[in-house]
Length: 311
Image (cartoon, rainbow, N blue to C red; front, side):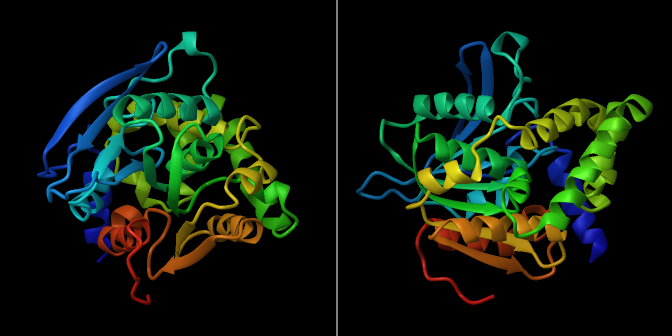
């Protein structure tokens, strides 16, 4: 079983783009917002419907790319699905220096500007995301520049929330102690070593399966992602309470993940009224890849409003 999970991780994280072998009508676009560019693969509906199809936006994790959603895309044949590679991954170049420092809000602005080029104004969006992508998804929804009707998120690594809530002080200290340690070791270990320290916190396999050239390719962006996701330039818990108070949300976590990932979900659940939290049996932080079918089924059931079978 472990070898099967390793193969799934290697296939997804080592991929160089958003295709992932998915057979659906699609087109590729490199979109620009100011000096920034972001690659999108746009999947058109397979089953034609008399009404306008719903639009789903899927955001991948740090160290990954859009191809991680191959299973989920195939399970949404009646929807238009937008799958970007986030800044600095696969076919999307890093944020250019001219755009200013990299941050969560900066990436949300680029995402919003790109999506507005692909959909009509006021188009309702169903947003699914994982880990660092889920942090960006929350920031994008909170910005309210797009109409995000539903959010399905797997383990958002929104760690500043642990400091803004009194619920889990020990968890907050443990997370930030580890993050600060990796920062202090960067000069000694280099980008690849420091990024490896961060990634191995989520399970040793997610980093170890990457070939050396891929580690070198993504290490600097992984460190930028971590800096952004633990900084101050992102919506606070109070801002999320105000902007997302009416937004239905499903938060998923693995039953074999770190306590801090579960605690972030519980902090959000305590603060927002329309949130459900579910555990995915046997999964860790990389559940959308290692347990792709089970996680995709829950995404589909929630995003499309179907009744969900009990886990």
